[in-house]
Image (tube, rainbow, N blue to C red; front, top):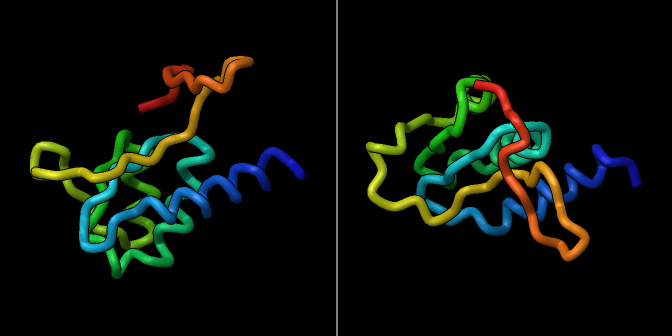
Length: 100
């Protein structure tokens, strides 16, 4: 299985954590992009998305997903993002230098 196939699989599994009729936080990067593609298929079942970056906001917008600012949301039951690194013990690390 290629790395892209693994990322798609992770995105499909992450969809299971999305709470219907709620807002979802969405990170940035290639895995998050696959997640956004999956989220677009159920966009009618969520209130909208809180993007972590301008690039994420643009991809969500392209899929017709309603965008909201974090400061406008009282409850964000889930935030989905990919890991930048994983340690030998399975700990995930964020902060690999993503763009705006």
